[in-house]
Length: 123
Image (cartoon, rainbow, N blue to C red; front, top):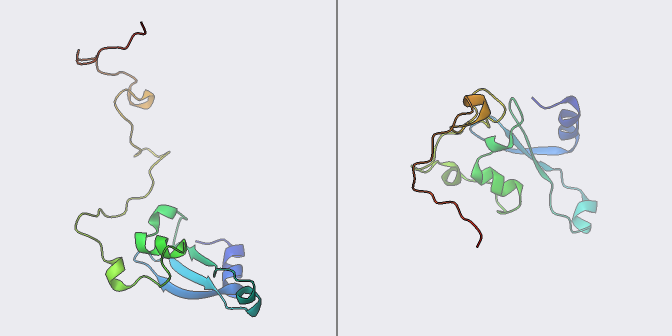
């Protein structure tokens, strides 16, 4: 949920242009003569549904937000490819975060070297 300042700014200055499958809303700044005269790019932003997390922005919308593509993503752009995985939130700092073998929070014990490794020694 966006804070009150972001919602107020968006209400005053934004024009909604789309929504993604996660419920995030995408906006552009309302057209002003001064912006066009100055040659500025249009301002684009996202208002996240729920916790603000940048990894929830699908690739096509990310490209649009960063002016990589000019036009809004179409249905074909938003369809997931068969090799793409479903979104998973960033788990860093949570109990579900990845911890490799030997991590201090996973016992701190590493397997012994198997002998296929030879340490480098300077001559």
